[in-house]
Every structure is written in structure tokens, then in C-alpha cells.
Length: 500
Image 1 (spheres, rainbow, N blue to C red):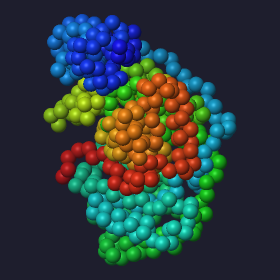
Image 2: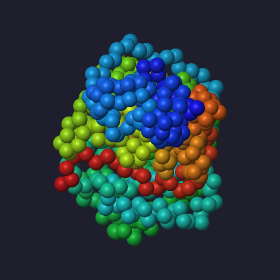
Image 3: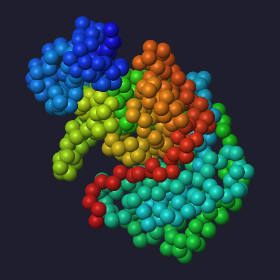
Image 4: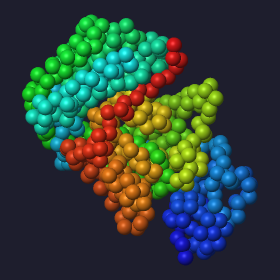
């Protein structure tokens, strides 16, 4: 007899943990009428046309035709449908946070009080016109034999992008672009930052120059420095000369209340919401318990599960802010001839996910159970410790760019299909949802949460493992993405509005 997984008593579908042949007896008194692929859904009872289909005890869509017990439930008979999201606004109060400084990581304490997990030199382009220059400077530093002499420096990071000009100089698009540049300019994983523009663009460097003059940050324009070769030689030689000084930054014991962890997923499958995401949620709750912070994002991928976040909100004001963000997305997608239910991706569907409602329920599990302390706009600086939500697209590089700009100094990235992802200057921990994929892509995956499905471990055990990996990674242990050289090309600020 084949086993299937029923996640909630209310569910009328279950998940196949392996390929189930047609006409095969499975548990829960069901016989498969179709072949059920690995990770896909099987009907547990008769589901009439236009009736709701439940998974996780929540609505994931409606039946587009009558479905009999044992039938494969997927794109051919399950479709997205709007429904009334009921939730109860509770008088949530922050739990007592254990900031007793009894759990530490080894990090870099900056003069401004912020804490870093890496010690990079940042080359930050304010406009696409300076992208080549910052890349060549970073290459010159990273290829220098001098760099190898200094063990406390992780290298130079080129933050190039395609924006910064041909855009409105005011409005929401420019506001979040400026917030993104500011967030990276001030990020504690940088020992030194060079902010480099061309000189005539919309995103002038004067927008970012500090009145108080942070000595970690230098501002330069290509036009002012005499051209490409001169600025490359000037900046790269400056950096080489300051390597001994930057190397004086050493790792010290820092409470994990100084960690801010980005919660991210990509290439999701049907097991994301069963294994890796709830295990990451468990780890997220531990980070919050010890006074740290976590940030969930990807607004199009919480759609349909937002009511679960509303119930965890610290106050009604942030519920209204998140509702307003979702309404903005509905308008934004409609004027671009799309809709919020235009998801999951082809890879998600192959992995067993059918509707955005199903995908979102699994995605929200990454956030654990902690109170939602605040709702941030894209790249808005973190203001309250604890669990936060940040508005962003679902596209991973753009979403993570915002999370890191908001202050994330470690990234946890779950994947069921095998996303290859890294993001300098913040290390990215990759968590596989199933053992098959982990074994196939072990050189890219840091943790296998598929052992939960294999009955070799449980959510709490893997959650603890993720928590301790976050601490060791923050202390300098290299992730698989760092070993493989990922992270130099993922910086991708969100571009909103007309390109002029």
C-alpha cells in the first residue's frame, strides 16, 4: 500500500510522497484512478464542480469539474477562485524577548553600532552608466595579489544594475530606488563603500551624500574624475592602499539579537510548504525569541494567505498597510494586463503546485508563528526587531535586493526545484525541500529538509539545524553559493514606473 499525506483534517486532497501508479490502493481508503506524480495531489472524496478544494485546512481553489475519489487533482480540474478571507484581528503583544546575550555569533561590529556577518568592500553604481566602471574596479581588487594577504577581508562586491536614469526624479519609483541605494550604502557587511555615478543621471550622488559624512562612504562621478580609466585606476589603487586598515576589522562575539534574516524561497514545489518552509519558520521563531529579526517578502506570493499574517499583526495599522500594498498590486498587475493569480510558474506546476493560493500558503509558513511587528515598504529600513513583512515582487533577485537594503545580513532560501542563488554582501543558505533534489544538487544545497518527508527527522529538528547554520554562517562559515561564486550579479533594484 502506498502512503499519502493529509495535512489537515479539513483537507479533501492529499499529497503523494512518491509516484503512485494508476489503480493502486493507497492509505485513507483511496484507490488511485490516475497516476499521481511525485508531489502532486490526489482527491480523498468526491468534490463537486465549483466546490472549494482544501489543503493545509485552507482553500486553494475550486473544482472546475466533478472530481472523484482517487483522481489526480491539478491544472485540468482545479482552478483559482477569489473567496472571502476571514480573519480575526487579535490584540497581539510582543512576546518577552530573550536578549540575555547568551547566544552569540562572531561578526564585525561597526562604529555606528550595526553588526556585519561579512567584511566586503562595496562598489555601488547609482546608474547603469557606471556599471562597467564598478565592475572593473571590483575585478581589479579581487584579482590583486595584495588581497590574498588579508584574511579578514572577503573581497570587493560590484553592485551594478540597469536603472538610475530614464525615470521620474520624484514619485514612488524614485523613492524606493533611493531607499535601495541608501540601504546598501549603509549595510554593515561593508567595511568601505564607493558610491559611483556618471554625473548627469537622475539618481545624482548628491541625493546620497551624508550631511554627517560617514567616513566609510566615498562618492565619485566618472565625469568629475576624468573618464573611465582614470576613475578605475584611482579607486582601485585607493582600495589596495587601504587594505591593511580594512583588515584591522576582526570578528568579535555579538549577540544574535543583531542578526536580521531574509526569508526567501524560489523554485518551489509541493513539499515547500510541508518541509523546508515550516522548518525555516521554526528557525525564524528562534531568531525572534533571542531578540533578532526576520523579514518575509514577495507580496504576489502571499496573496490568498494574507489573512494568516493579519491574525498575527501587532496592530491594526500594519494590517491596513499590508492590505493597501495588496490593493496596489492588484491595480499594478491589471494596468499591465496581468493579475495576481498569474502564478505559479511552469516549474512550480511541474512540482505539484496548482494555484497561487496553494503556493502562498506554503510560502507564508517561512515566517513561523511570531507576531508581525511591522510592515515595510520595499527597501524601507528595519525599525522594529522581531518578525517583519516587506512589500516586494516575487522575483527572487529583486525581492532579496529589497530585504538586504532593509538590513538583512543573512539570507535563508528554500527551494524545491533547485534554485541556484547567492547574494553578496549577505550570505545565502540554501535549504532543499526534498531528498531527490538535494542528492542531485548537493553541491548547491546547504541543508536537506527532505528528511522530514523521509521520516528521518521532524520540523523542529530541521528548524534547529537551520538556526545553528544561520549562526555558523554569520560567523564566517561559507555557504555553498559562496563556494560556487554566486552573488555578484543578483543585485536588482525594483524598477517601478515608466522608463522615460
